[in-house]
Image 1 (cartoon, rainbow, N blue to C red):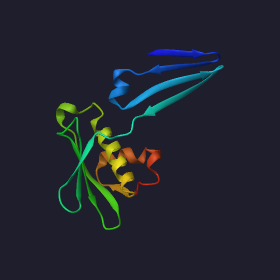
Image 2 (spheres, rainbow, N blue to C red):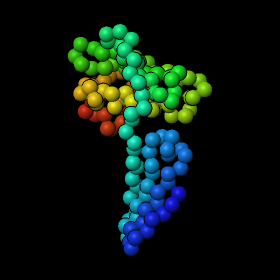
Image 3 (cartoon, rainbow, N blue to C red):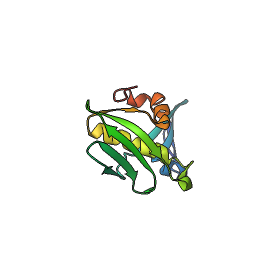
Image 4 (cartoon, rainbow, N blue to C red):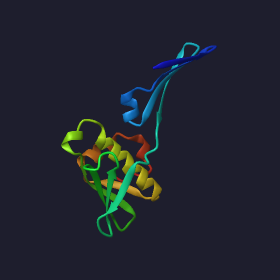
Length: 137
């Protein structure tokens, strides 16, 4: 944690290990007596795409090769997330959310939309306002 102060503006930047693992940096900004919270999120680039056949796509994170997210490309250019699997040794560490973020990155790059039958992804998507333009409930 370090603090940067310039006249009436104060930045508190917490770049701790937990934030870096979650691909984000949490900052609070104080201007005069008003506080603002800002979270910078790093773009996902550390994943691989494996095509199991012509319409099954598997996303694997480079760091967590035993975990994956599978989706099926449907006729109408909508990817349906079928399953998410996180290796038991990595559960509770945010790997599922990283797979979800990688899936969003991939779907956006394909200029497609997504739906889900995977309960984990359904729950995330229903509470994620940033996917309103690409999530088909």
